[in-house]
Length: 483
Image: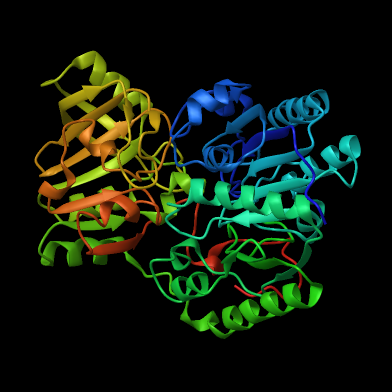
């Protein structure tokens, strides 16, 4: 079939990873403001804001050979349910923008794990509304996060889907480029597709493609637009029926698509017992780190802001203090009050403070006296493999030394997981120069911090992202899903 000559491809993005157990709602303001990600961006400003960045929409428009019409892009840090007004406002902008542009096809930079109070499967609802306005024959290609919870409805509503293949996600832009290649296949058509859900879940610390079995599962995926297959590992802290992993494929015949999906599913199910969360208690992690030659990284995955964690729990910090840990740094601890107080007091000042612990269901504040070592506005560019070149705004930041200890804490004001060494360097700390480096992140930190050390420990402290799935009070999972 001869390819249609395209004149216009609309592009847009709306991302959120929703932890349905996390406190509070994710508001429209959180999508508008710049934090760890760019703020809400409209029209041609998308080209200016995202050019050269490792973000899916960037990879798409840099790879696509057709005329691009950008509409709107929005993303907020993972957290609780997306507020209804935020969802409706942004979706209406997307739908109206697409209708007004009257493009020949559409690319959407989505996540795949967005939930609102009204919609368990918010991304499928976005596509339903677009189909209502543009018709079932209108080509729609999307990209999704590796942690997407993909429903059969979302799969059916999209002509093709590309999914990140690395965790840490160093292939954001590459995935956007793969989506552009898939769009070309859709335009030349026909494309046959297949989809299967996996009957078990695993915590996000077991999903890293740096470790087996995910490493081999992803390495075996075909990388050809004529035969494309992808795996979504799922996002466990979401109490919805379609939570969990899925496999999909696109091919020139239905038999080829089905065969490829079935092959990946067999390998996936055979590897069920190999998935390892790699967890130890906070006290054991600190003790082990103390006895290893530095530097050693201790991750706090259960308070990972990148999975809806509140970013303010003090479990790991208390373990450091209780062990009288030497030459230890911890960041980021979300504490706008402490950061503001440090800015008001100035470098060199000492004051008493209740550090962290704003969400008492997870931890209590640490009562201590601190010295202000450094303060910054929290605006800087990242340099690590995931976010290289990305301008972040973490709000007022401060480097605080806890009195009578050899422990320093970096506090910030805008929630973001610590996935780049610049989060420490911004306040004058060079991670490789310290014995113990504690980060509030689950896996993404590895992309940059493994350039410092391979000695990485995953510590258990209470938070909104339990990595022992048996502790999560699920009530709505589909029947038979194991965890």
